[in-house]
Length: 440
Ligand code: AMP
Ligand code: GLY
Image (spheres, rainbow, N blue to C red):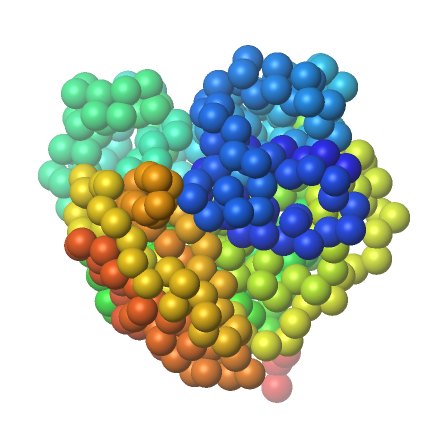
């Protein structure tokens, strides 16, 4: 099978790493890829946003399956264009991808199918939004830009003044352009966050093992939100019972809802959840694999991932038996460049890659890296994700940091607390999953 992976980050390196192990594979391409994917795939110099270029390449090369990594091309309709050219695609068409491209579209689906979520109001003009905020008695409130905003579209506001300023910034000053033309004002949910990913062809559903991201840039979950600074999997906090509850209350109704809406969805639905005292509530849907969640998941997925991706793209997922998972822990530590998630430096030489990869149980997934002659250099805010396996989470964490410390580039930094809060999270999550009440 000839496979094209679209994208060039850590998630795409991880997908290429796993797909490259498949006996079904005859040739692997990655567009545009990074310095890590070039050792597993042929990097093709076509940007993930260049739909005409990608479709042309896939047709000319006779690609059998395209796996789309990032949301941008999906929201823009890349999967539709490829399907129109008779190419199988893992990833939804533009209509399905609107779940990630529009928070209002997501809320519509959640409300219509009674999937638990925060209550909200929507506004397309600043005046009424501010009038509403000035009358709110419960604070904080959460302001969300409707469109794609690269993680910058959600603000938690403590006061009406702050919230009105955010409305002006989005709707009057158009800080995020058209993404902020419509906003949601949402109830603030308190609890613990976790994500659940499910592969689906619109009919069959395969819920993947849980992986927990660390979104904020600073230790102890402080500072600005990022794409994700580290990951661990499995999540002992997400017990079987809790996962079953999520599947019944959230995953199945979501995919059922998509089908009822006539939306064909063949790909992965990544559901961001808040575990509240009333149980799990949906924060957001993503229509792609998580980054860095995927880096941990591919290390633990014991089956032939390509077979599952291909079956999903063909609408034959029901024919697959559930895969096995390595019960060991994986911890992934993201190494970033000084300044991330703001502006950061690029083009610095990365040293120590071989030494890091020489550590037992370690795989270094590249994210923002590029090859310049003999050198691998930094080319993005998140530079690598160093993953290690271990029988315990502590062993996996020590393995990951041990290998991370071999690496060297100017302005390198990471969070030192990836996978250290597992126990406290476990206790909190367990206490937040209400059992049906029985009267004495
Ligand atoms: P979203 O893009 O909707 O997932 O929001 C980004 C982040 O904002 C989430 O990962 C949460 O940490 C936070 N967030 C979003 N909505 C809420 C909410 N209703 N209550 C509390 N925090 C939220
Ligand atoms: N790690 C979060 C995301 O991929 O959206």
